[in-house]
Image (tube, helix red, strand yellow):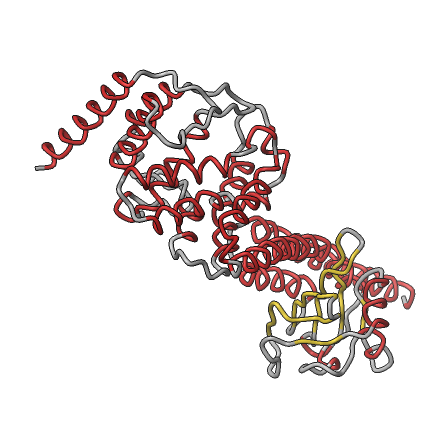
Length: 431
């Protein structure tokens, strides 16, 4: 009888343990399903940090948690997100001694903290007390420390067990990659911004310095060498044909030089792909407008429209462009000019997926796409400059011997008349 009771109790305990383990596994799978979209969605890193932290806390059954980013110069943890703590400053920071950084880097997984281990991993010199945390999970990517997830109490102040630590370790491997990628992006943008800020203070060498920077932007692939320099030259020429002041023309040239600066953060392989980009690759390429805007916005240029031209040079008059789907009335004139100059150079330049168009074919397409895609006044100014090239009246040739002007002045005049007719007809219909 006693043996039967004991056997029944053992079976009941086993079922209870299996049920608990299954619930923990289910909670981890649910957290993973929530974490995937959080890592791939287009949102600010501060929001992504909160979502990642929530997923880890849910999987580990934690009431309190914080996600810290690691900076090695000086060695310090700074909070990116925190939840549940009653007394957590924002931002929280914890300076680290070399021994702390080494211990975190050497840890093989999440660590349960106690009175004897706080000083091994954390210092007490920051604005948050280490004893708030009951468990640490170092975030490591590419063999280097990228950050730390620090969890506080659990409901009922129960201890973190192996199952919770395993769930944390699984999730933290994904979070570490996201934190590492964010740090890389920040580093690239910071270095580029510092270089630009330095150049912005050297007024006497401004144009030459930006020319050199434009050349550096285009080193990703042989097919785009010189692209930024040409866009700057075309934009300035269009501004001249539109009767702009010398200062405005200089601003257009600089905006053209820098319009693709965000491509420093784009994977090099995309520039040589012979076929069309898939949706994920296109999104990565398209993000160069937003990244470039973030970079140049931190620099005090003499010309305030440069950040707008960098962000919006792929916008189109009918609202089909990116990243903000603006229409013509929303786009300042410098943006329209740089956008057209960029398109004209792309059309007349070889690409891995197509041969270049002739000047005549490119101009014909631009006229056809106006005013739906491009400002007809800007297209008209480009026609003026190309016509001057064709009759040899430009002091500095627009195309500068890169491509021949294989279109006669009379054909350019015909295109200009067609463009004028389209604009006049559109106005008549609108009345």
